[in-house]
Image (cartoon, rainbow, N blue to C red; front, side, top):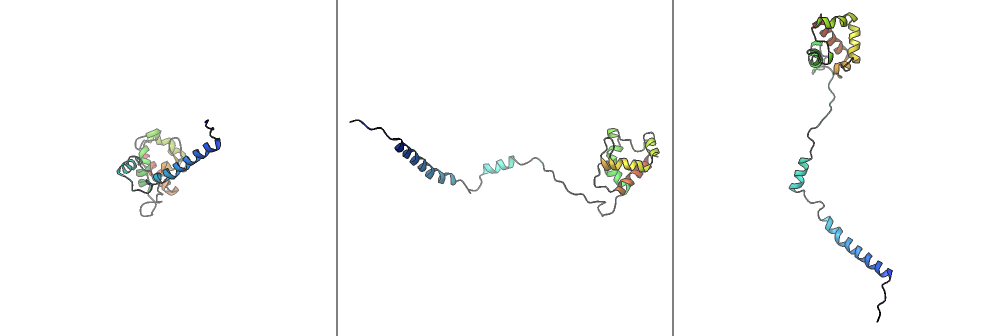
Length: 148
């Protein structure tokens, strides 16, 4: 007796039945690991992928720690001295009368304008973004006093 060939609809039925059976069996197995407490290996991975450092910006309080404006000597010591004590990036050194003479000749107002706006390698306000205009002016006068 000759066997009759399988029809495509019966093959399709078998394929669908196998697929449904696999889904019914595999989905619950894959859910077993969900919600379980992390293992020591997971903790090690979390530890290893932490950032090396953190950078946080904070708004600096205006003025000194007591809310009062800082005087010229304080501003010079905290901001200006970094460059003007050593002449970094072409900054005229404090006390160098020859370097400061042409600048002094322009007047305090012109120097203050240069410091407020930045000039050459010097950023605005000498890099002290939290400084008030009065604090910058006091620092300019202090620096000029060192260089006369």
